[in-house]
Amino acid sequence: MILCTYYHFIPESLELVTGYIYNKKNSVRYGTIYGFHLVDVVNAITHNDNVKYETYEEMIKQYNDFKEYQANVNPENVNFNGIAENKNVIILQLESVQNFVVDRKINGKEITPNLNKFLKENIEIKNMHATSYTTTADSEHSVMTSLYPLENGEAFAKYYGNTYDNIFQLFKDKGYYTMYAHGNYAYFWNRKNVTSKLPIDKKTFLENFDDRSELIRTYLSDELLYKQTIDLFEQAVNENEGPVIYDIVAASSHKPFELAGIIDKYKKVSIDVGDLSGTELGNYLEAVNYADYAFGIFVDLLKEKGLYDDTVIVVFGDHYGMQMYDENLIQFLGYNKNDYNDARMQFEFSNVLAGMRIPGIENMEIDEAVSKSDIKPTLAQICNLKDTFSMGTSMFNRQSYVTINNGKVITKNCYYDGTDWFKLSNGEKINLDELPEEESSKLKEYSKRAIQEIDISNSVVIKNLLQKNLNKLKYEDSEILDNEEVLEE
Image (cartoon, rainbow, N blue to C red):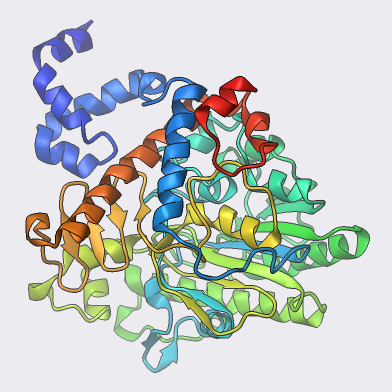
């Protein structure tokens, strides 16, 4: 009653800030801190009603419109269709590894020598962005479904029973044996329930591993995780007639980046952080360097067992590790605090390390903006899978923009904060009226489409709109359906 009364007296303020419901920074900017908190409360109470599209028919019409637009602005660049058909696949998610560590040294030593080597030899994805600023579970959600996360793991916690066109089902339909592993307990982030709803043949959590002698807090060390998962991978490859897909989630470089529990830590951490010792940045760099050490073991084991040459590998960081406003980090990245480029730092915040190995493809770079939602359709393209419902598109076709679930937009050269566009090169605000009409229209369309795709994704998740309709999509011949065709079936 109190909430309803308060709501009644400030309708204009509420209407203003709800226009920025995906972007909390702008909720505060335009509605003050009070309006922001009110919207948060209203959103929490009426969350299930806060969707743009209530029905499948409303949603699929918008989805088809969006996919048509997406196809037009992302023309095919490289024809990799089916290039890795029936190859084994490993998806490897690294905890908190951002892109700024790639090829960077501290006191004369590379922070990530093994990852650097992998990226140079294979496909380096320079401009991969997280689809949210939140959790490991949210990253997994986007990779598995090519949908956007909600807030703080809510998709895993609250909507784990939903029906999605998930990546495991795509590979299962192709005859793959499906596997998943995480070095933490199954209850963490509700993964036991999440994975029980997915067609996964072999699941391994901390309680299932034989060797748990090296833990970082409650996580299995990356080294022990890889040694045991590669053994399981080898066994699956040898025992199953079809190929194998393995989704592995590593966790050693998790905040607070202390590496407590690592045996002979400084035989495994190869860098000297010097004056940064004991700082958050120093701890972060050591944790990432350890994650890289373990990644080197991961690659070596695959090679020793004869599995490397015939396996697609996608490796990426899940989300940010460092707060980008850390003064030590600003100095480490070479920024002059007086000439601070906020747009570039916002870009760095969501830019995570990423690379891919496709057998037969070497020394390739992808520098267009891509996101986690593009991983599923990319694998579908190269492995010749039927991808039915994805908000992303193949990374080999990307030429436009990517979206974060709060409405921010990133292109190769620009950043949109939910209100204004900025140049990444110098942080200057872009006056759209001063741009050529074609370029101005393009940026306006990007920001408009970003909200459209978030609205579609959130409606699918919150209303479970694919539950009764996925099969209608799955067996259609065309990739983009007319709404009328769906209704007629």
